[in-house]
Length: 438
Image 1 (tube, rainbow, N blue to C red):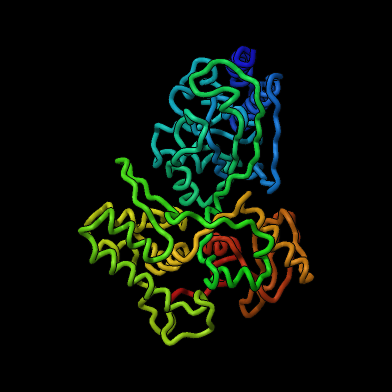
Image 2 (cartoon, helix red, strand yellow):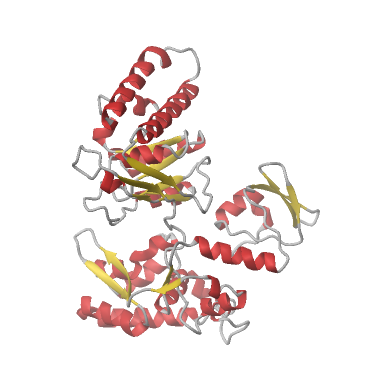
């Protein structure tokens, strides 16, 4: 019944498009917006026509899908597509060729501006950019295909590349239960419970430096949030770098374990591995605040040359083994690593933290935000939700004195702190408020 309903609804939209929408004398952008609205309504009505399973939507983090973003979701069933299309009418999907060229729903999704994944990342970047400029969000299933067993599998990097290059946020959706309702290669609809939980961490993957006595442990203790966090220490192998050829390289907690696993995988590269570890530990000593100190014998201020060392240049100077380079720098996606631009000190500070105590936040990273909010309010602070800063005002001497939000609200202060990417912050308030790096 469910698929029959969807088939008939799709045929209706195709007829509506060809005979009414396309000939209608208004701008194409308006007609595309109308078709996306109709697609969203068809998706929702199809799922809610499935009386044999329950539906639950949870959004405890109050994620807002009305603004352009890249939405990533796990993929276990054909019904996943319908579930994510319910998020907002201005949502499009990156789809495979069989969907894009389907005689049933291909015509209206092509007209609505869906992205054909086989066109490649470079071509798609410009297509996606134009859709973001129109106010649309893009849904990507980063696993690339439906999971056969219902488990979440390795993500491809395409969604994260798009997010970085287009400077748009990633918003997560976790779909639970659809594998039992309609598993891959099954045309039957079974009873079950669809839960669109929307708790799928992409920002707080896992946290480093949380072993007792390490830097983040001390900071969280000072902020008085440790007791409010459900922290679970990662396994001895805190991360695995998986290669396209199927090989896996382990990263271990503690420098002894970190080196042990690398030496087991690359016994002939002992000299390069030891030199890398030594340099990582040395670089970290140049950053006093990172080590919870105000000053140090040598710092990046007195030795600015430490900031100029490129991560890729340094590692490729130690070894020509491409797999070892990948094992050392392969988790760069966690910090938006870039072969041409990422300095070694960024790799050193982040990797050292992970090696010295990697933990995950059970039940999702939202608890950290809630714990910090609690302490801010305990100290008399006030928080304003859903405020998007769009500009700033400076005084006669060039100092930033106020910021303006999208709703017209103006906030004045003596100091401003931004947790956006520096390039985004400068884009909003102007580069004139910042000193050059050199």
